[in-house]
Length: 225
Image (tube, rainbow, N blue to C red):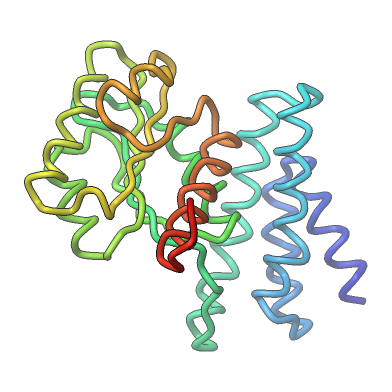
């Protein structure tokens, strides 16, 4: 029965069907399926498929958004059950993410947060219009590995530089890696302000976040990164 359920979960993400993904999550709890299994064998393969299709330009941004919302709906059901059981997913790392001060654009940042969560990161989403120092304070509080910043306006891009300066003042650099994105943001801009990574979209941002953690693990092991 669980294999059929996992297949349906995967399809609910591919279809971007939030009500179905949430209902399947509720059914899986009733059936006694481990929530971690449901996430990793049911829903995550759907997110991965949509990401691959997006990268190949066979699916598009609206598909990615709908898949992200469907994943979020499932997690909203399963995460309280995980807490009730005292279980935790093995995490790749901890990310603090937000849209910088002066910018209230939500969709892109939220999509990255959902995709990172699906990929196995613990994500603290600060929301939009986030003061520069709040990124550093939250990163310190939760021992973040990565700080992710979105800016959708050319006028707020400078805020990304100011957040990095705030992380410097807090003594969190270079151990806390910085990932930036947003419509006007470029790889060159990321290099100019001293960021560690740049994601042109949610799929790329997840890949870069994974790469940053792999490099850290290699460095910690004394291997070349």
